[in-house]
Length: 442
Image 1 (cartoon, one colour):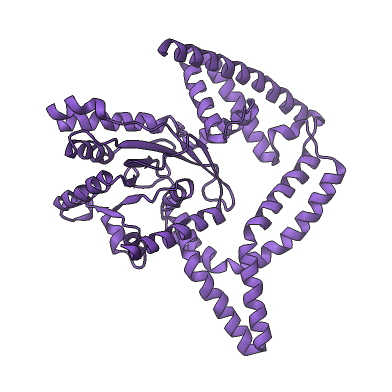
Image 2: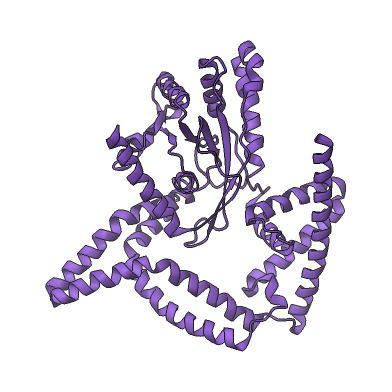
């Protein structure tokens, strides 16, 4: 048992480090309770990265539900088994699904001990712009655990929304939006009459709870305009996913009560977003042009980081090339990101040692050690260098392309101000409506 715990701690540390090195991680919402049986549920759009994010925001040690095929993959199976993951057997994997009885027994035992189960109700990862159809597994786990203890077990289902502002880009933002936990003790009578109906009802409640902390679009093309709209509205301390979620909900509500008005605002957002992307500046740059001093400093940082990026590129070469090969073979994008993260753990050390041995045998020991040290430092500095390069590039672009000047910028500034006013009004109206509903419910 102690060996398993030590392995779990090492794998958890490893997963947290990988996620933190690749993304800027943020979290918001109510902190997850540290005690009591719990099923953590989340949307699944980032492959194994999503599990690493759960580890990052949670002090618990959840046993994840994993498809049986992962337990047969080289090396990965040792990591999965080391974390105490529980397999599920699916018909499409050509395995005996009766083995799921043993999996559910293990889940119920874990919950009865006050443990934590982590799972993704959508089943598999993907890149859909919205939540896909949910499986009933999480509901059956919770209801089964309650029934096994005569409904005297306080099992909660904790939703966690995962949001990537640009999943495939290195050093982009990754958000965890922690929702309000729910439980199913109110379904006891229905469960005793029909476990199937109770599982369906509980699944709908899980989906509704998760939908409250997950950003959903009608299509991927809607995302840039909604993100920009979220930046135009006063933040009030809310994280990006919460603001985008509010914008999407507000636009959907506006479509219902004033479709022509909604269409006009949507067209304006699309136009402003498209033109700003073509120019390469942000909406705030239209009237907040960076000063000469800041621009000069940004140019200097840009020059240094541009040179350092080539050294870093050499250090990351063993990760980038295989990832591109996999991507060209039409692998799902979330699988490419997973490969980049986990593959770098093994390919990079081999690359560093190989480079050091080759240079050492050719040019001497000092050259070999210098190469290993230099490439190692370059790999670890990749994150800050990337951040510095992108922020400096944004400042330079803002200086040369921004500012309230020229026919194009003045036209876009006018459009931005009109949209800001309209969106702020809609946001305030929605907040008043929500407060009125809350007061009536109370």
